[in-house]
Length: 351
Ligand code: GLA
Image (cartoon, rainbow, N blue to C red):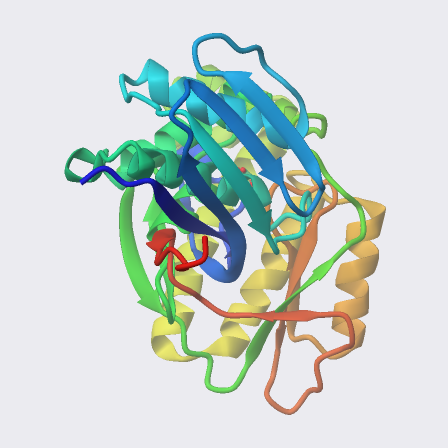
């Protein structure tokens, strides 16, 4: 049955712990959140895409057979269409209505949510349900859009979290095998919040790609395929700052395992200490914090958070805090908990 209308939703994510480990073949522990992006797609009957981003009140329009790269949110729409076609998936002409409630550039993966929702909507509209690519391939395709169309050479953290998210669970992801294991996230009344540092970040223009290049160079110098495979004793052979970068990655991987263990053992206080240690490492060894982020982390701790750290790529974005049950949540924070991953929604009758 050909579908004329579909609605796809993809969530943003919070990464509990495991930052800058994904592109280093390491470990991370993200979860999908309730906020996300939805894309309503309607068949057009002409080989064109007409897209409208409701929150921005901006439009884009291009022919499926011939289009150039563009900036901002348009980069993702054009990129997804191109990469789907390049992967041999026929894309049908469509009118797209994009809306969402993940703050853009706030470190909660608004761009991955947009990519994944676009991808699912276009795949479903193209009536490829029986031959939908595996979700892992959708994640890879979306990451190609980040690097080729939006200029950020990201790993797969955000896309996997958005695609595989589960209610009540964080995802322990091993990026060397892409194995994903759900870890129940019940904190016994402790709460996780995010707060925006107020500093917008764009991965493409921040130091993100530079960090990635440093890690690549460090692993080349050590002769290992990825930094996570480096022997701790070998790190002293690296020049600074590469040694610091590598040390962060190895220690962060260990903190991810310890964090998953803390969840299994029901030890939120242990998790809180790991968040603090992760932040210190991101600030001092990986050097991706900023003044605004430091202020935000400081404010959260001051307000009684047991642990706080920057999440995502850094250089701005959001900060995560963990609060004991007895402590009131500060004003301006958003409580977050694991929510279901990307999916098609029922199409409203009036759509
Ligand atoms: C961004 C990237 C991810 C990951 C994180 C840092 O969110 O998109 O791939 O590298 O930064 O952990």
